[in-house]
Image (tube, rainbow, N blue to C red; front, side):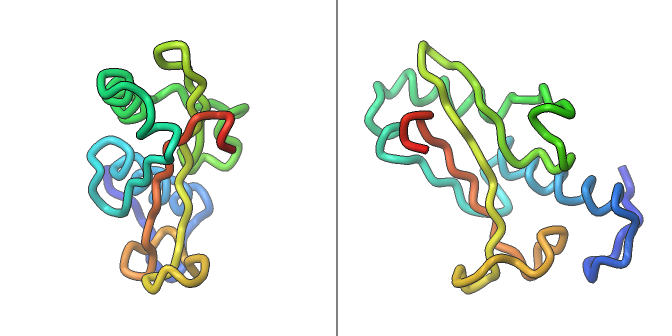
Length: 121
């Protein structure tokens, strides 16, 4: 899928959202293109449950207007092994000090996928 979008934001809103969603999907599915953080709650569950949670996050594709109002594929709540799990993607600058100026541009953005139990939110 080719997207017509410059990283400086000079693109249609739909294309910018598609670019962000694509980058978020890549991180979520492959663990590449950013950092993945597992909270203490996730690291504290049994290894097989933790593996199921990570796999369920990677497989997630049920985005709709209710759970993805901005079309960026940046957050969801799922049920896995009797656990309610929240995953979310945040966008930081490369120094990890501030928010990214342009989440559509991987050259200036560090993506962080956080996977947590709902009670940790």
